[in-house]
Amino acid sequence: MEKDIIKKNVRERYGSIALAGSSDCCSPECCSGGTPVQAATLVGYDAKELESVPQASIIGASCGAPVGFANLQKGEMVVDLGSGAGIDVFLSANRVGMSGRVIGIDITEEMLDRARKNAGNNGYANVEFRKGDIEAGIPVDGNSVDAVISNCVINLTTDKVAAFREIHRILKSGGRMVISDLVADRKADSINLERWSSCIDGALAKDDYLASLKEAGFKDASVLEERQFMSGELIGGRKITSLVVRAVK
Image (cartoon, rainbow, N blue to C red; front, side, top):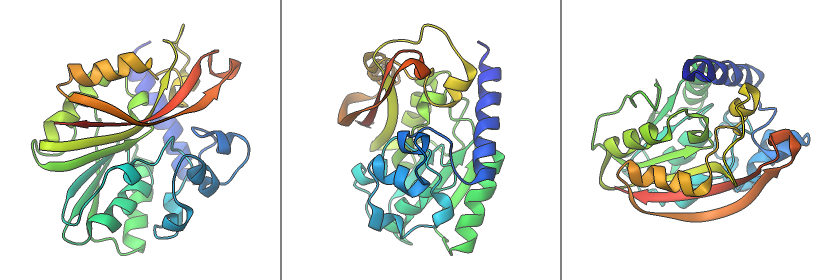
């Protein structure tokens, strides 16, 4: 299936989610009728910490909680890929403080608008949101970032190696990448646009995912957390697993 068609469908889906203020799925709790906050806690967010960020940034489109694994420090420069309404940007901004900075990157105008309003309405002066296609070129200088985070977004890309190479490019030497993402027990037999934009058909097999990191230049990637996420006929009969992966440049 053409990459441009997949990207267009992804933009349309997440534009609709931004306008609605919550996801209809990318998290099993949302699928079963829970609130975005319940969905966030189900995949690993701390309920108390969620109270510290704009509630409009919590839309239930996550598969993990990467900030909790990133060991962010005061003064660090952080980039969040596929930042959505800004939940992980704001959590990161609280950790790096005013001496640090967090840049959110998203391909969807509606998400960027929502995130910028959340930042402005809540006084976040140490964050910025930029439009960018993470496969084609992250709009951040090379060798400038201490940490890159991402949450259930790399699986939506059509070229994982290109995305990982861009992450590698912007990280400083010794900088780390901590990503929550979905993998599958096997490659999808066929591609369905709706399943791809729902974080399913674009999910690689775990070994292929880790191999993509190595091909992009990362060494010693490690899986910090792994849990079953979804399985069944609605997702093409595959078992989908949520991972938190860390790698260092």
